Amino acid sequence: MRKRREWWLVAAVVLLAAGLRAVLASPTRVVWGDEPFYLWLGKNWLTGHGYTFTGYSDVHHTPLYPLLTGTLYLITHNLELASRIWYIVLGALLGVPVYLLARRLYGRPTAVLALLFVSLHPALTAGVIHWGTLTEPPYYLFIYTGLLAALLALETRKVWAYAGAGMLFALAYLTRPEAIAYLVAVGGYFLLVRLLERRLFTRTEVLLFAAYLAGFALFFMPYAVYVHGETGEWMISEKAGVTYVTSKSLAYSDVATFDRATWGLDSTGREVFFFSRQSYNVSMVQTILADPQDFLRLFKRNVSQFAHLMVSSRMMPVYLLPFLALGWFRRPWNRHRARGEGLILISCLPVTAFLLFFIQERYIATALPSLLIWAAHGVRETGEWLGETVTELTGGRFAGQRQRLALVMLPALVPLIFFAAMIPRVDANTSLGSWNPAHRRVGLWMKAHLPAGVTVMSRYPAIAFHADAARWVPTPNATWPEIRPYAEAKGVEYFVLEEREVRKLRPQLAPLLVSETQPPDLKQIYEDNEDPENRLFVFRYIAGG
Image (cartoon, rainbow, N blue to C red; front, side, top):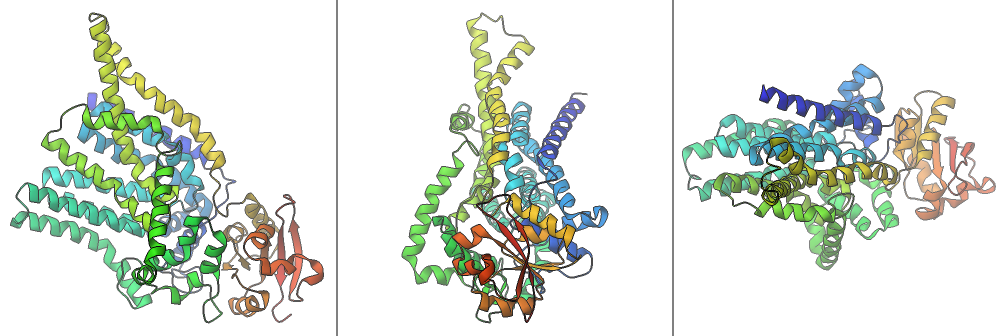
C-alpha cells in the first residue's frame, strides 16, 4: 500500500509537470532556430522524401528527434503540434529517472524534493520551449535514464544494466551528438570504480564493459555507416570542426562575423558554407593548432561565461549553493554513497566540453538535474536538522511524525516558491538570437496569400516554416549579384528580407529595401511594418528578370 501511494504521488507530480508545460507551450509560439530543421527532416524522412531539407542528404542533424516528430506528424499532420507534444510528454517524464536516481542514493524524501525541483525549474520548463531546438526534452530523458542504468550497473553488476546504459547514451547521441561525452565519462568511471575494487581485470568485468560498448554500438553504428557514406569519413560528429570555425565569434557576441562564417557562400558560389560539403571535413584540431593563442583567449572567456550563466537566478541561484554543501557533507559517506556521488559528479562534467566552443544556457542545462538532486538532498538535510533542533528545544513537543515532516519540508518552500515565481519571468525573457514574433506573422501571411508548396529564401527558417513552404533556402551573406545565380540554382520563388538583418549583418543588401534601387528580378508584394524599426519585406523572385 505504501509503495502504491508513493507511485501515485510520482504520477501526480508528473501530470502536474505535463500540465505546466502544456500551458507554456503556446500554440502561437515562434518555431525558430534549429527546430524547423529537425521538423522538416522528420516530415520528409517519414513521408518518403529522404533525410533532407536542403535537397541533399543531411549529416549535420542527428536523426532521433526527426524520427519522433515525424512519427507524430503521420498522426497529427501538424509539425508544430508534434514538437509541442514531445516537449510536454518527455519534459514531464524527466522527473521519473531523476526520482529513481535520488531515491536509490538518498531515500524517498530527497527523491520527492528532486522530482518537484526538476518539474518546476524555470530553465527546464519555460526556458526549453524558447531555446530554438526542442531536442532537450528527449536528450535529458535519455541522459538521466542512462545514468540510472549506470548506477544499477555499478550496484548489481548485471549485463542488462551495462547494455541498457550504453543503449540509452546511444539514443541520447542520436538526439544530440555531444552525448558521446557521457558515454566516455561514465565508461571511464566504470573502469575507475572496478580498478579501486580490484576487479577491473576479471573476466566478468571485461564482459560487462563489453556489453556497455555493445549496447552503444547497436544504435550508433547504423548512423555512423550513413554518415560515412555521405562524407567518406568515420567520425563521431562532423559538426565539431565547422561549429568551432563558424560559431566561436558568438563567444565574443560578434554576430556579424558568425553570419559571414556560417552563411557566406562556399567556393562554388552555389551553397552556403554551413550546408556545403566543404564544411564536412573541417578539422577542429588543425584550426586550434594554427592559432593556439586565439583558442586560449576563447577558452578563458568561455570559463567566465560558464560561471556567470550557471550560478544565476535562471539556472542555479546562489542561495542553493549552501544546500549543495549540506547535501554533500552533513553525513559521512559509506562505499555505496561514495560510488553514487562519484557518478553524479561525473554526470556534471560533459557540459564543460562547450568551453571549447561557446556557452549558452541550453548547452550547460544538461547538468541541472544532477545539481538539483544534490540541492534537494541538502534541503532535506536542512529540514531534518531543523526538525531535530526544534524537537530538542521544545522538550519533544514537536516529536510527532506530522510535525517533524512539516518541519523537514519547510526549507523546500523557498526554492519551490522561487522557481514558480521565475517561470513567467523566464518565459517572457528568453528571446535569444534571431527569435522574432514577426517571423511567424509574415510566414502566416505568406501561407494565406501565396500558392501552396513554394520555395522561400530567407535568413530565418522560422519564416519558411510558418509559411508552410515546400522548401527553405538560406539567404547567403553576399551581394545581390552573387545571390542571384545561387537563388536560380535553388529554384527560389519568394524572398523575405528583414530590416534588422540588413542594418546589423548585411549592409550590402540595403538597396533592396528602397523601391528606387530594387533590382528588376525582385517584385515587392508585401511589407510587414507592425514594428516600424524592423520592417520585413516579401518579394517575388523573377528568375532571369
